[in-house]
Length: 425
Ligand SMILES: Cc1ncc(COP(=O)(O)O)c(C=O)c1O
Image (tube, rainbow, N blue to C red; front, side):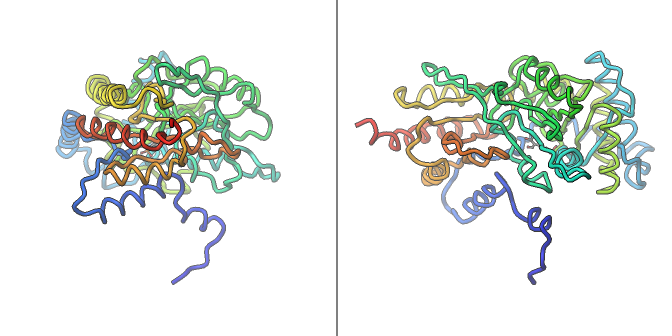
């Protein structure tokens, strides 16, 4: 059957960004029988024993408690499971000296859903027919933003400036404030901090500057804190989460070990939270309550924040060090390869300056030597202008075992040397 699709049906039934590549990767892994691939592509977090134990412990506690029936056998409030809202309110008020009330918090089925609500509540066409942009101050950005909006023309990303340390093969993206503009055509601003795919962390000053510029036009600033402290605390550099005013601080429990339970949290102004809550009621009534119930216990006890700092952060930070030292050992010094500064998240991001082939061709060549990475061009949602840089990057996941990362970087170095070789003669 070939059902006739609407414009929205057509848009939402297409895979965007990295999801399209993931299909190719899955097929490669399935059809490449007999060949062992080192898979450096996943965004799926590693199951860390102490983290799994934490969730197992609170699941048992829930099963044995008299709350169990109330949690799973009954509908609940659209805003979220009350003990989870209470736990987040208490934890964040204490930790960051805030004055949050229950009305400042919304629980969603995963944070991706939250961004979908926000992108379509604040971005797209206004009742008066004006296009309200969803502005990404930095590019590359999280590929999932590419499929959020029902009006794709609303998504607009700015090209960054690049801070390059050639001698040490390092670089960092920064927002280009000489270009960045907020006006009456801006619906909302959105960015991930720490950033997937680059590991970049916008500084507190950069975030304040963006929020102040947006505040002049009453524009919400959605800060995707999927990797931020207090959980999963996947920042390897100091950063302060920012709250208040027009900032909607958004969390995810996925990288804190619960991706299967789909828990996202929005913290912000009552009016912003209220809009998103109604959106949620219309879409799915509320988030599933079992995951919320165990999350409430792990947050209220303080264990989730502790385990994030003591187990989750060091695990990925060490992996980044393995990537760095392997690149140092195997990569030729005379080739312009650059690693983005590892400031957080679960990825390493590399740029090959003046790469003689495209990132897609590099991805294919790496597959030939048993390495799977993600081609970088899938991480520029909303960047409308052509930019050679888009086709010169790859994302490397920090979820593989250490020896696999070492071998992976060794083979990457061999492939890259061959690609650049003719130019050196
Ligand atoms: C930056 C970023 N934001 C949002 C998400 C979506 O997370 P969730 O599982 O909470 O929907 C991800 C998932 O990888 C992510 O990397």
